[in-house]
Length: 237
Image 1 (cartoon, rainbow, N blue to C red):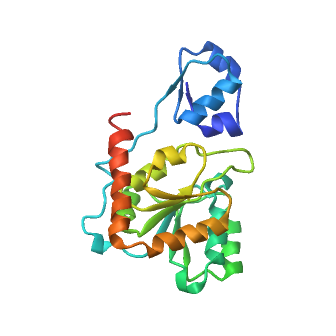
Image 2: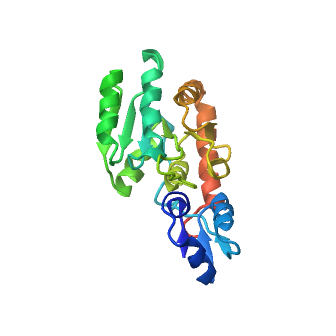
């Protein structure tokens, strides 16, 4: 059987029994495998990362076609850190606050909309609802950067190796994300990493990336795509 973060951290069900009976337990990230073994000694654990289609998710052909908008994609739940994201945008001075598109739906939508109103962010933060992978492959490469402030959810849920980061890397997007679980191993030098659950750190990282010269931004995006092709393609996994 296959384990993701929620199977170990948020909603474990009969893990010891499953591990004892299984010929192999497949996890999607190394730390997840380590933590699973703490629950289930002995467990025969194999790590197979989730892959993405690097032919489907491609960088934009011309860098000049990219705009200054930032992109978040994910379910609107605690462990995605989206409340930290809105708070960070609210903490920014107007002159450095880029437009942000939030793609996704979920139980926190109403709260997030209230935070947008509270901080007066209607001109800067836009909710686009759930979108298809086709939409992401078509529009994603045109964004200035991707932001994924992952953290531990209130129910213990954790994204151990988010697929959406690999999709963003495949599209050559510079990334701001958190130093959480196996994310540093996943992104390598293709992202600016900050501590989870710290909106102020997100503000600093966004400002730093915004000030980076275009050559450095392109190099960061290319490093992400190279890393996906080397380690996380759907074909190889």
